[in-house]
Length: 115
Image 1 (spheres, rainbow, N blue to C red):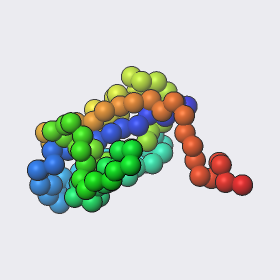
Image 2: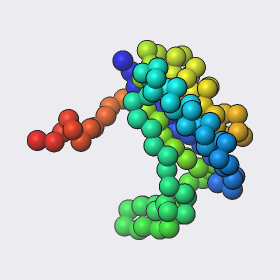
Image 3: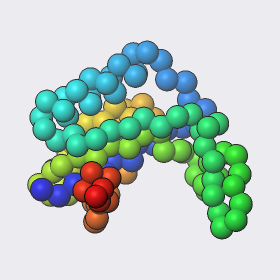
Image 4: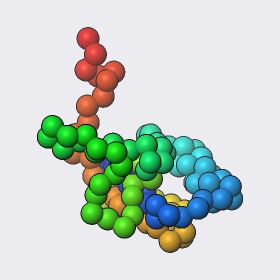
C-alpha cells in the first residue's frame, strides 16, 4: 500500500496548551487503531535546529517560511484521496496551521539495509 508523509506545520510563535496537545495524541491514537499510521514524530523546538549548507552549520532553522515543520507522520493509504482525507482530520488544520501531504517515492530503513 502506498505511504504518504504528513508534514505538520506550526506557527513558531504559537503557544500550544495541554488540550491541543491531547487532541494531537488522540488523533494519533485513532490512526494507530485504524492501521493507517506507520510512524509519527514530533520535532524538538526550533531553537534546537541546525542548518547544514555545504561546509557551514548554523544555529536555527533557516527556511524561507512563516511556518515551521513541527512533526512528521507516515501513513498508509490506498491512494492520494484517502491520504488527503486522513490529513484533513489532523488537529493542526483546526488550530491556525496546516499539513502537507506527499507520497513517499522510496524509503531506506535501517532494518532493511543492516547486514
